[in-house]
Image (cartoon, rainbow, N blue to C red; front, side):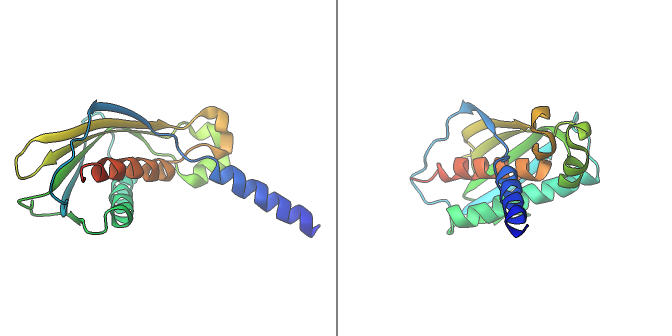
Amino acid sequence: MRMTKLLLIAVVAFLAAACASNVHQNISQPVESRAEKVENIYLVISNTSSVQTDSNYVQSVDELRNAIREQLQLAMPSASLVSGKVPPTGIKASITIEDFRYVSGAARFLTGIMVGKARLQVRVELIDLATGKKIGESAFGTSSSTSEGIFGGTTSRQLDAVAAKVVVMLRSTAK
């Protein structure tokens, strides 16, 4: 009996871990490396008018910002994420959410495909604050699949996956 429980827990953990969101990237402008070290990253997150903004959207924007902050601290410990006043030097990371559909983990687990697809589509522009020049642009998109059932992607997984891609993009600005 105990072995059956352990096996069941292992299978559920494996399936849950195997369902990370797959992010598709479309590079509009490859990121240009800068000679100087990146110390300040000014993060701006906005949305297009077609995105419905409700309490789930606001919570998700905060979650995206926090995920970027956490992953940035690991990838670029000397860089700081700045909000509020625009610093004179560094990089402005402008993230525009173009498509968003919230799906929670609880809803996915309880209703599976009936809750629908979680969607997240963002456009990221990197701008050198000292020169005002755009140094990179990409679009990232992810959507859950109905074939994944209760193990399909949720908005939280998508936010973490997109945050990782944004941090890779920021990291590539430094030589």
